[in-house]
Amino acid sequence: MIQCLKVWKVLWTKCKTKPTSSKKKRKTMSKFKELYNRFPQELRDKLAACKQHPKYHKEGPVSEHIKLVFEYAEKNFPEDMEILLSALFHDLGKPETFSERVVNGELKISAYGHEFRAKNFILKYFELFKDISTNQEKVEEICHNHMRASQYNKGTLKKAHKRKAFEELKHFDAIMKFAECDKAGKKAPEKVI
Image 1 (cartoon, rainbow, N blue to C red):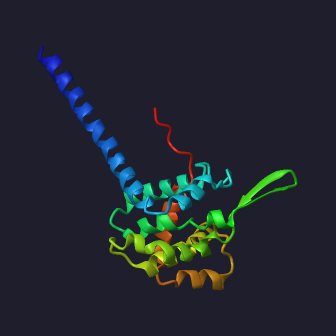
Image 2: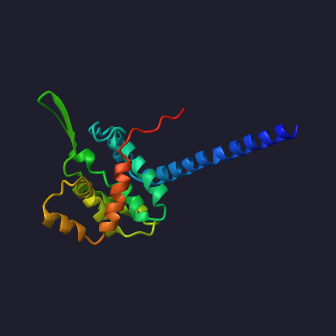
Image 3: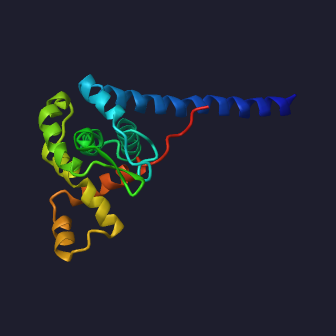
């Protein structure tokens, strides 16, 4: 009887701890939804419809990528509001720069220059987040340079003067921290059972 009670207690403890982790995920999702839903519906629809190259973005449309980047940022840098807001803003320019073409029988999807459009969206929509104390200039610099960070990490930012100029940016450390989040958001989403 005592052995049964011990087993029951272990099972009960495990059952009690499982919902906590899903509650935390729901809290993250609700925070993401609350912030993401501040953007106009028209913009959110464009992000959900905007495809990405499946070779680089197995997760699907831009909206899913933004969600995954935000979730990673919140899990790893929960107090860094500039990183969290950069997660929301960094790819908003993709629908405007989206290009799809067939080259030698292969589909090419790109959004060249989308990082330069981020500033326009920050200027237009940052006021929607004025209740969050943050540094707008830092968010702009992170978003503007997130593709350079990817090149820097891959070693494709080859010219020494370009690497040096990148390393000397005011918010270089934050840009590199965000690059980690952006990379983590490029995966197939987990299947819910």
